[in-house]
Length: 453
Image 1 (cartoon, rainbow, N blue to C red):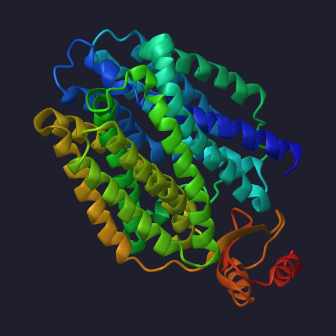
Image 2 (cartoon, rainbow, N blue to C red; image 1 turned 60 degrees about the horizontal axis):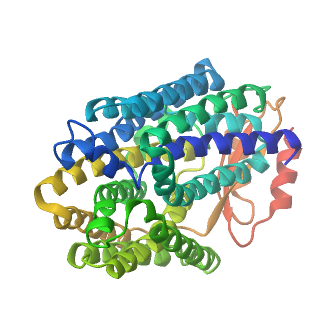
């Protein structure tokens, strides 16, 4: 990457991580805090307040991404960050569960993830786009792990209202970062690998393989939110662990989950066994949820099942985007990711609300009965999915002055050794390819593109 691309990638990864921080940092402490507020007569209200963030993300994520194509990326990002900051301060000053819910709704209205990835695409060359997106992915994973450890500690030091206030302050600082650190794009255009093409939505929504993955991310985050309505109380009641020390459980299980994720992903990709790794992880997740439903009455039982959970969660969180990239049409990857992210937000909302309601009526057994059932459904869908091709996505710029025939060039590119799919987009000046992960004739592809200038 050149210095501009590196600056843009690091800066936007930080902003993306900040958005996730608003969800993850309060995750291990939210239920305990919300229970102390007036109006939280049962876990139902707590779950709805926790999931309100996801409702707004699901509703606004795609529309705001499309809006950024029309009015500019930074305008949408500025507006989203201001909403997120306002919601954080409302939640920080909330004196009852209603205002806490309002704060979460306003926070969720700052749905800037699509605009951030679109701006990143504007600021990076095609050959470096994958690296830049990987940096965002790493920032999300790191934020999740760090938040589970820091959340209980910050909750003890400054309180959950202090966490919300801190998040609001950091968001305002992020506004300065967008203004003075993130470069303004020279050319801002739609990118099929990051943006949502409404004309391809029907195709994406009808693809049974992509629907399986969309259900998967829905189930994964639905179970996560339902779990964290319950787990903080279980750690206190059954684990006899003060809430300020919950990080002592989260830290080792997160580290173990991360360390075991890496060899699993490498094995799946290198040995073309990604489906086997994926299905095994869903099965392990189902075992973890069933174990929590049946045996969650001691500290060590909690630790064992959470360890299984985090191993499976980390592997699935990493493999799902990879599977989307392999399965989605070359010119509709951004659309597929947009639908996938929306399904994730719906899962957050549904899991938190339903988890709170089930906990209020049937206790932890009811919650983990639900999470077990949804994981078993996912296991069936995962088991029956087609194994993905061993391919990777590549992009090549075809020149601003190019006036050739995109259909003809797409056909010629598709005939090159190792190229599985090729689509040339005239308006974007980009050739999107899916190529063999192990062998393809890159030199011939580049030469063919250069000859068409």
